[in-house]
Image (cartoon, rainbow, N blue to C red; front, side):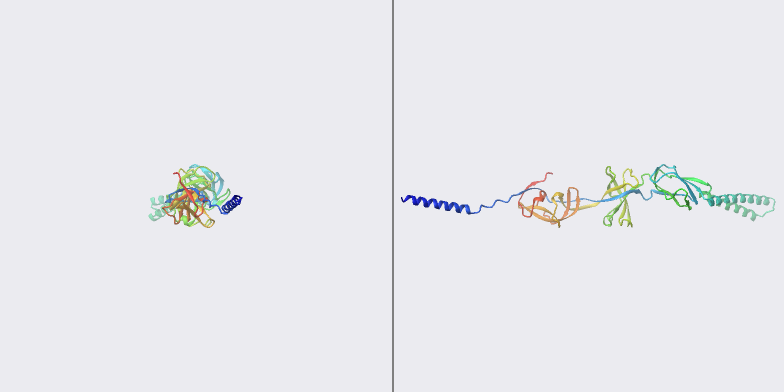
Length: 348
């Protein structure tokens, strides 16, 4: 009889202990770690490449403006702007204005008259009917008339009509006249550019232009498609283009082959940029600034940086990185400051 109350008491005590054990909180679970790939924090340099846009245009010195030295009328235009021409090919037909033709004819008549007078005075001198001074005056008059006629002939007045021909193999750049136009002496009738004389003229912002130098390498690609081709900076202007407010520079292309007016993209290497070399995927931005992670004691440590140049799959950054600590190259997007990490080196 006495053992039953003892048994009941023991059962009640066990139940109480079990309830107490169940009411205690479980131990905290260990924080999960993040697997990332790292690489050494190293400094280096990458090419400082500026990308600009421009169009194929004649190089300085490759242009020639064609004209006639006498007032003329345009009778026919035999080519169009952009046409490829060969040396000696007729480009434009013209006829001199009547005043030019009349002036030449008068000069020719003056020469004949002077020749007749000189011969007559010389005959009189042989008959002792004219003086030496008279002979000298007649000869001087003849020389003056001949010089005037030669000058008009040199200026093209001796041919009432003619053709303007291409001075070299090239391309017609512009034709500022139309059929029937009356032009002044020396007025531009047509402009042609020499074959191989085309360059890509592109605009650079003044800060980049200050670092441009002839000879710097470039790659050029047509916006119409096709492969990139090598080139180099040939000329840098010293003033802003008033239309674009940029500094124009000419880029020559190896082998030529440019099409006048075609649009191009050019990547010009103007120097090098130095700093910490970080994988592009490892550089994050929180909406205010860029940052990377380094690993210290198995934990992620955020380091604020500034990106000074993007070079494809790597960025050049400036910031207080510790060269002794590995830099997170892959998996940084999963991290926050203090996160536990497991590391694996980036395969080289």
